[in-house]
Amino acid sequence: AQKITQTQPGMFVQEKEAVTLDCTYDTSDPSYGLFWYKQPSSGEMIFLIYQGSYDQQNATEGRYSLNFQKARKSANLVISASQLGDSAMYFCAMREGIQGAQKLVFGQGTRLTINP
Amino acid sequence: NAGVMQNPRHLVRRRGQEARLRCSPMKGHSHVYWYRQLPEEGLKFMVYLQKENIIDESGMPKERFSAEFPKEGPSILRIQQVVRGDSAAYFCASSPVPLAARSNEQFFGPGTRLTVL
Image (cartoon, rainbow over all chains, first blue to last red; front, side, top):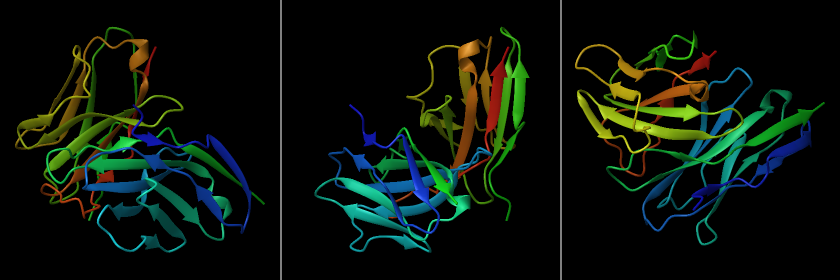
């Protein structure tokens, strides 16, 4: 079964608009972490934001925020005031457990294109 | 403080040759993870190593692939007798001591793009 689902293969947004990238996850472990990474055309993986399952507040990092809805098992990434440089692939990932299972499970990604 | 280093960045091999990919974790990080990204897909976990130990190799193909993280030197992902299907980007990530769920410290290297002709 798919553990991380990103339902938007591609998104097109006008510059300066806000954009929401969807991510739903599936786990029975009460302790987990959720990550978003950006992969520009150059190929590197850039860490954007992290949300722990026990965190009470939604994570924010500059223009990035994570809309964490635990009951719905969703962890959508919100980018405010989009810029041309935001055009990239975006991956949602999950780490399960406190110890031992240190690996990340990734979704298929969403290709975001910002139009001028 | 240098980030995770991977070399080479690009590697071309002919079918049947061996590929060796190197990863130097961030300073102070003793845990290394290898992931593979096929074209147009997300990253898939391969193996998790600590110094001199393989902790989780559940994502490694049963044949031709091996990984090590010696006491001294970088972690090595080795692919023997490469085939065209091995063409992919291989990413290494590192983290410090085992993490609690509240931590976010797993940082990726730039990747090695392997092309098998």
